[in-house]
Length: 278
Image (cartoon, rainbow, N blue to C red; front, side, top):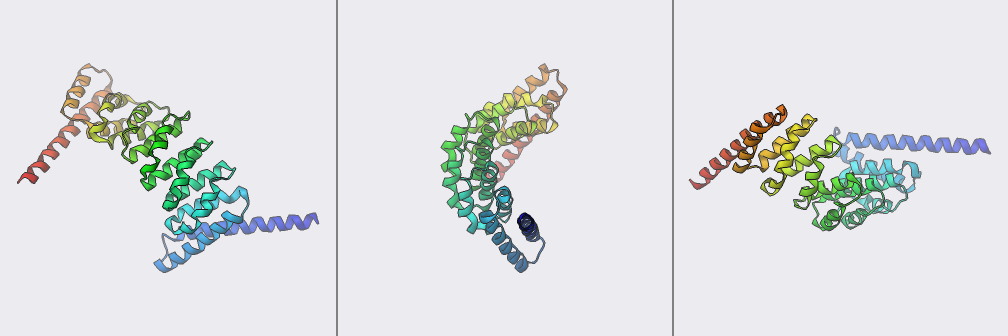
């Protein structure tokens, strides 16, 4: 009897593995196959992934949730099941499902994703925030603003990025704070998204100039680019003052680059204005 149970479990495991591999192959084939074949492959992949997400082992469900996200809007029929998995006890499954719903882009998931911003797991909250960004939905703004005060740095960072992508200036203070985050990627993202606010983020100029001396080259480059996009004539005066008084080589180098960039942007604006007035 034990042998029979063992054989059945082994067969089930092998079958599950084969179907996952098949569904994953179909996901990859959608980029390389002809249109008609790709559509058929996608339909089969979505059907298999949806079936196993619903009836498969709990430990493997997040694989299929991830695959459904890879199929994008073709997985719309799986949205109700993915929404149900956001109530699962498995945080990894909730996190993967939130990401998948963002990739699929069905607006029926928005209310549930907004509610998921209050999930007990910070990684789930992070995934929900990033998913909502893909919708460009402003309904999430109040909760995202609240998440700027979350105890977890990563959640605060994701909420700030989400707000920045939505063009909400509440993100600016936390992005400025993130310029001094421990993680270099977080510092780089902060500088990048500050640049998206243009002149509305002038308050960030001192912190961005300070980032010219960052140990990470990417952060320095991104901060310099942000100063170009945000700065104006008054910023040039500040940068010249920094060049005269700083002893840090990187700070001086990037300050000079930023001045050239701001001057170039100003000339470009004048030329466009001149063309429009002709």
